[in-house]
Image 1: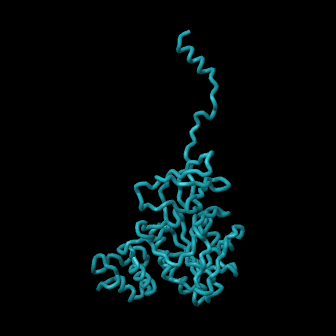
Image 2 (image 1 turned 90 degrees about the vertical axis):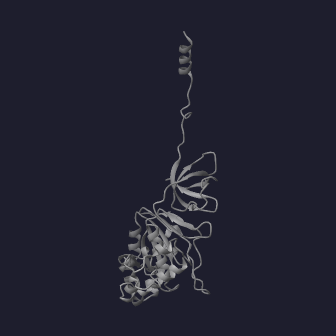
Image 3 (image 1 turned 45 degrees about the vertical axis):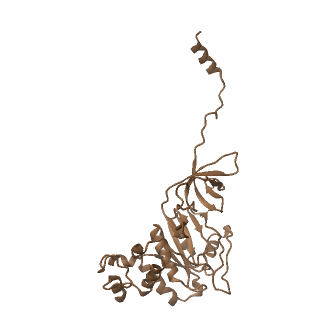
Length: 322
């Protein structure tokens, strides 16, 4: 028997463990909640998995936004460790972002959502068309479908609701009138949420958490109250958090926002006001800001009531703030 034959026999008699050569491949999941240091990732199990990020994940790209709720990530779950590791951020389909501080110009609030639910009350607190218009610009910039929810309808009259509903419906935005005490519009809203990833946004105190509590009472979401002193809503939701819906899909509850600046360049702002689009490129001066230049087709459209003065003023206010 030669040496080669002896090695074959020895190899065949050697016991092998079934897991000796098993390689645990990275998994993918969705970030459903985050704290300052940890991320909770849904990987299809009963509970989200706690994860950290590698210190070098964003190395060489200091201006890149860190991981947000809704992000799809690749993770490595170490059985022996108390938390897994996020290895890679997958490309984003959509995003809701706003202008942030110097050095980090963009703050992504939520990513990969389908619908932006803009909740606005007409009273308590009063309707803020400027903030609604800013959210519409953010939806356009981030490829989200906007849906305007006029909440607390029981505190308003039809005469107050109808002009606002008609204006935003004319812009191609779906508008839903709701009232939690009267259960108005809740069934329609529940159906619109089915199978989609939706983000609740709006001014503090407009009733976002109340809507969620009415739609899905088992979640026991804390409900904030409007401050009697300032009239502004107290911040109830501290950070964005994603919840699975019983009928399929997810909803993301976000903190109440008092000020919101979408991340958009001044020269591109007019493209995100849908009623401006048919007139763009027809002004006398190239790069017209539509504010002070002569022979501006947008200003002429406002005079001719083809564009409302309310929306034009929102455009000018937002333009000046950028």
